[in-house]
Length: 346
Image (cartoon, rainbow, N blue to C red):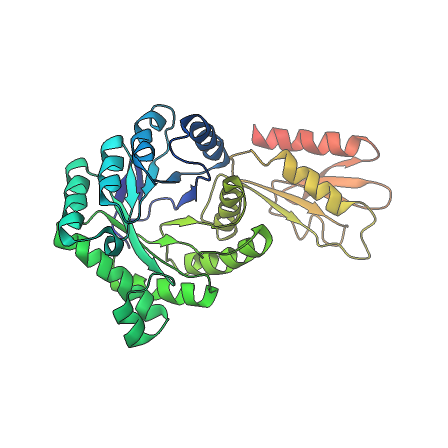
């Protein structure tokens, strides 16, 4: 089990809830827009939100954001060690740096001292574009070079007394990403930040992240994650919640099971399933709902659903825990089923 790292008021690692992360598309210094985006993402289920820090205005903006946002905020810094220190002083709950591009050891030490003084954790790691040359030459581009590059960055911070560390080893190639996380998980007990980097647009990106992140979670690897997509950050959070729910790592999300349909289906099962999904998208409760195509795969196959519906040519049946409780026809179908859902939610 990984060690616990505290990020603001949130603990990750050590068996705590797997935290969902995303990253802002706005400049941190755009405080009005940034606050609005933070609050929107928090409502969607985001636990940790990251901002790029490209100048001093960005670094100082965290103090204003923290007045309006309760979830931990992360400052993402490259190259300029002074911005890392300024972001820490500005109130960032965590920073993300690569010690290898911060500069001299004196500069790394200055950042390390600021981290320790303020009790701020740091994420370090590697991806396929930042593998240290020595490891790339020795091992080639594989899980070993990715893992050892990350561990080298960790060692630099440990040298100056920093041990409040989260590690990532991301790749855009799914099998490589999985192998890299499996490799690093055997080498360290620091919490791991999971992700498939540069995964692409929403459709393909969700598939790649689901396979990569999902397989790691099923093997007990990972403490926090970001589903990286070329899409609105809210879609990253929605996808992350769905992945966690699918591997039974999230207990406040409604699960909907629905038939893929076949020639036996004589009602609009697919359309109705989408209506149900939209109806419960903001519900935060462990609830299982079934939308089934016909009596063959109805109450029997979905017997563990809290509430379900199965259709036929003439009517639908509503069932709870496999027991039929109501038969409905015509325009009352949607009204009655949503009423049953509301009763379960209450």
